[in-house]
Length: 339
Length: 100
Image (cartoon, rainbow over all chains, first blue to last red):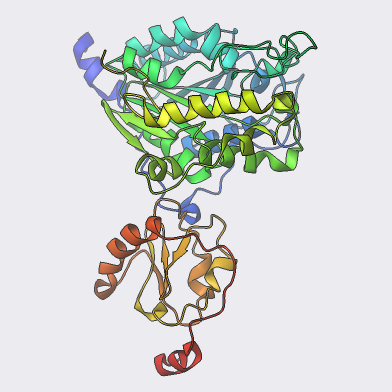
């Protein structure tokens, strides 16, 4: 008997994979699904994120990558590190690509052309492809609650693939090829970083899981990916990735810069599951007042892209970061307060 | 994540464990060390390093269960210990008394 649409929605075609969290580094799977064969820069944390993502998702996964570093550097003519099935989608269409792939899989399974089994669909986009151009597509995708997929945005705070142009995710005062500091104007980029994860969490009440991660925090990052894939429906993860080329520091400091972003409070780690916010890692201690935030200068002055900032600029960034933790309605996440 | 420091560490505090911890999750008072469960990645490197076998990992024995709470509440409030320190005075005697 033909299944009705509702039965199909509730039935096996749409049930996600069950991926329990790994309780420690030694329980993590040894299989790699993102291996050698890529041409990312030395010290690339975005590539590290892809590796963790593939490892966490496991073999029954389809990955889509919108144009960006992780497309261009990963799939240069006949070379690829992906052991998983991989598709390129156009810049800005990570959300629509994910919805289409999940819908396609469901249709093929319903028609009996594909064996019925839960298959992970992960769409990967950069901050340019996600926070700038692809925002509408991701927003639309997060409304399609009957499909299971994860949209992962790896955020290196610039269009790093095309030579470090400013994106919506670039922080205040940053030196990029679109905002070089000069004698007349020291600060050429005066916007503050777009707060993408809370924007999508607040604006899409049916999206069950939104999280922020940093790839230096490997076990937590993989567990967040596994949770996002198991919970069902569309989910979103925002990952901060230090970029040696764009942020102008020695590649060996990638891990430390990622740690400092969390320790200075610039990058809060949290997950929003079914409307419930939970901080984790060092951000949890910062939010509970158990860990003092390091001064932001420790994070900023490690990077060449902030080398032109003077004490006044750093004080301004420090004040904004302090306000984020002390004055925001939801510290570190949502900025509004009652009028 | 459940790796905990238990009563054998009291008045020993050899701090060999902190030399192998990859995430610097050890915190300590004058008496002993504690593991911050939020930062610990459960790698187990410290378990074999402890000269008095004070560190337990999953599954924690029944009689050591109370240390899970003690570690979780005390560790974040204490200073982080990242380098090896002098053991507690009389630590060697206590170690022998414990049978190690």
